[in-house]
Length: 212
Length: 291
Image: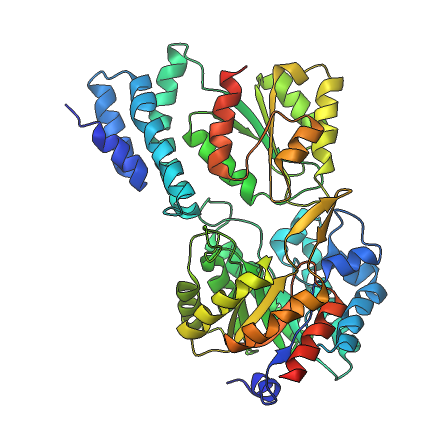
């Protein structure tokens, strides 16, 4: 029997090869794929997040661990889909119209994938219409918007207003982030949540789908 | 040491310039507009910013070319104008300097993350080499690789910039960790100074990321970890939001009050980043002159 503690450890240390190998072995031995995710890898990513908050890990370690988890999920996801299990949530993510800065958005996207979400990355400079279309055509239940510039922040409100106009505001949770964003701003424009960093964004997204 | 730097430093610490983006905005640059494109469309207004810094006492001014690399310009559908925008940027600053200040040309990050697979090393290398060549051909006195969050990207930019034979300044953003003494990627001032020294940078420093008070200890740590002169350009405190625009709280006087501590910590080049204006630089210049 494969030692699943090693799965936890390999995600925490960001060892994608080992993570994938253990996943493969565990699946061959008939371990339920959801057990691998929920009982071993999700707690591992929680530990990675804790270390980030404690300044023991920085962005590179976050990305490497997320990549390890993604490598495992590549094996697991088809099995879950085949038996009709749904992803934790489906996120339409992008930088808002006018904003081309995508480092933060890319980090959040990688960590959300590592957290078991299906991520539809719409890229940069995403119009409100594009977000709406994705909510409709792909049944995204989270809209995640990023803005680095104080000058492009107002596009978040425009997008939320457009979601209302299109009658889909109630179908999704709207999460926002980026250097100039604050909780106060999120409250002002009627977003469902704000996180000041990428680790917090994953926790926020999980909370959002749990409360939906 | 490169003769250009030697000449500047012969008379003590050197005053550089302050922020450009906010100055351009006060002259009509629209919210969300890409500042570098103004080198072609509004050279007079870009020149006015450069002249304001020279008048305020800047001995070194930068150029409006921070985002003028192929990666970022292609997002503006201006990838075919890399040479033109950089050339004009240097020409505008040289004309404003009129021999009274040196022109150090700005090279900013691409906004893409190597580690996340957003871009390859070859793409970064090519983009920085192309920009550096254009800036050098337009007769910049030195190249400033600035506002870098990723040491790997900074090193690629430094080695591309060095190919021109011009002196190269390399400075990073320290804004992460509980003491705000790490780069986004977790590097300490010591690691950064060592790596950039090895990469061949002639001057090493820190800019942006936090208010000036936090720069004193970073400056001292950089100083202790390298034999190269130190370059410091701090923000004017932390911004607050009013009417959708960022406002920086520090006054020129408060900003300049930290200059003696920075000099003591070993800074050789001093100026400002986000939120600083010509009156901040006048304050820095006055403090340095007072010694």
